[in-house]
Length: 115
Length: 116
Image 1: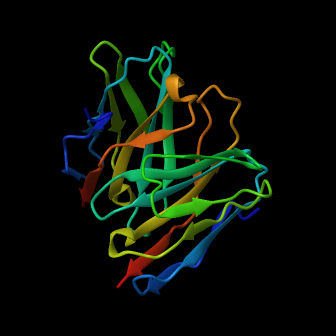
Image 2: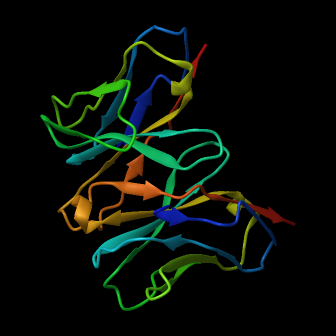
Image 3: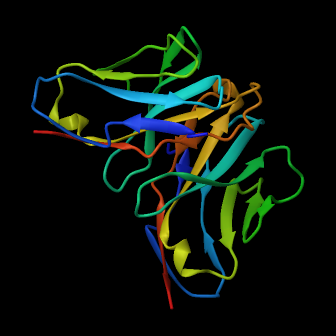
């Protein structure tokens, strides 16, 4: 039982390049999330998904896209990378019954630098 | 207005002593949940403790307890008998019913250093 896995761990991109951050969970969780953490700050929600085929925007969705074709996978796509997207990206998942008591389990993070 | 406010950027405590990390929150919702997470230097986010707005008793998990004062909108984390391994960033977070409990909003964190 690996929990939430993310790849890659580190990546350096040039301005204007694109990439996909991968996230997989093996806990059969219905909810999945993408956050970014800027230096010295808390986490901010980028996108989330409440089930396969259903996604919605969080606080800071601009410059990102997501899809959720399976329960297990929730990739985050960066199009036209910008220096402002330099951050640590965390994927998380939880099993929610809609009451807000579910605990989110986080992946190890991806450290992305855009130069 | 900030949803979650953590006013202590850094805290120091000696090993074996107790420490309180402050968290105040802002919501007009009656139903909400409060969470504390620990982030060690390795970077992962570790869930510590949860308090629901309707819970009558303060949450406890081992050495962690939550001092929940609903009228003051505060949810302070108390760590008893601090250990060197408690040195980390600590984040308070909230989830509200008016967002379908789907969005977790984090504070900016408090860095705790435990000295021998």
